[in-house]
Image (cartoon, rainbow, N blue to C red; front, side, top):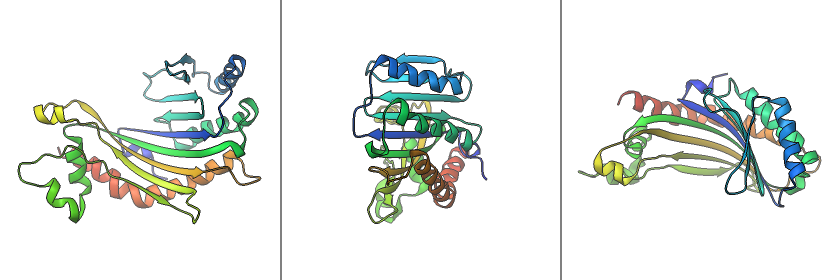
Length: 247
């Protein structure tokens, strides 16, 4: 299978579980959960609390890759930046999903939404929005606007969400995020920042009876890979990479 690491400067595989109820906040519960994760991944040794009250456990940031995990009041997030392969990231996410019913009292009934997200970052020094509009095309309806003589594109961040079942509970979303602002465009002074492409598969609502979080994750991954390989790589990722390479 194609290595996602060859498609962009950085890529990452994230899991987000949003819950209907508040997650436990007791000191012993939180520390016990993070210690159990650290037992499987000893290099995740940086533990801290953000000003928002979120708890974070992560690896060092200077290795070129990084595992991380956060606990928010109603969300569990797990991520792996530049994993050696998708399996390594999914293994981490599955561990989290195996632990939370027992260590955080999270039931499949308590699921508001489960997200499986693949992200791709492209470093580019220049007008991100102009580049995206030129690389991906703006379509006939917008072509006149973005190519108006003497104009410069200030915001162009395509986003689309589709449903994959009749109940609209299984959804796929493609979103492009740029990081150019009007001040940079006015001065013509751009830093080397990232254009991000996010592809998210989301399962809304409580899980079906006798269905586990891990099984749901595997289904989301399978569908995500199918859609990325057929609808995203050649249509979005490669055109962006080629446009940057020619600048």
